[in-house]
Image (cartoon, rainbow, N blue to C red):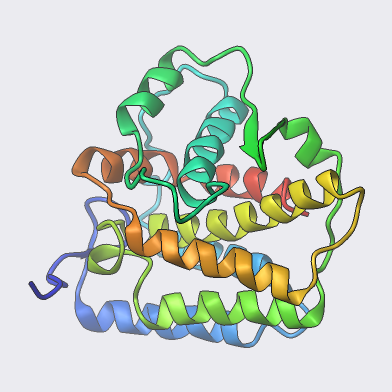
Length: 244
């Protein structure tokens, strides 16, 4: 069945026609392509800010009230998405969808601890915050930039291209994926006493991620949850701050 591109939304409930989208995409690709010395995660933050300016005034402030603290919500989102996209064995993983119900329950009653498991080890968000990664080698940074450019150019990050997300939620989801890839590298370095992975190791992480992106499936409730949780620019910046 051919993808249905008849419904494109800037944010949930605000439709774009095809030509309006193409004009926005042109700007996004320009921001990603002309990165200069800026890392791709920072370029994506620029894309987020650009799209936010297109949203009608006041709409981004309207959100579903969530009882959990904002940083707890951030951590729950990261843990659920990290488990989905970065399993220790991508070939043995039989999980192919986001557990939206489990996420919703934890938003109401957050667990006392929120570790992220990687390589059979539980890491905390304090571990992420306390370890500075900085820039990767130039080849790896260029590879990540090319990955992002291809996802946007191929429209594999929103609407019919990915989970029927709105444009803004799709860009935020893509940004968080890049942040989590950097989390994965941080965990590897913590486990290996600070040794930085080389280009080929980073390429393998990205290859496994791309495989997962072709395997995962989002039901309507999962898409609806991401629309609510991923619209916040403040949340995006908090999560990105852990990737530095």
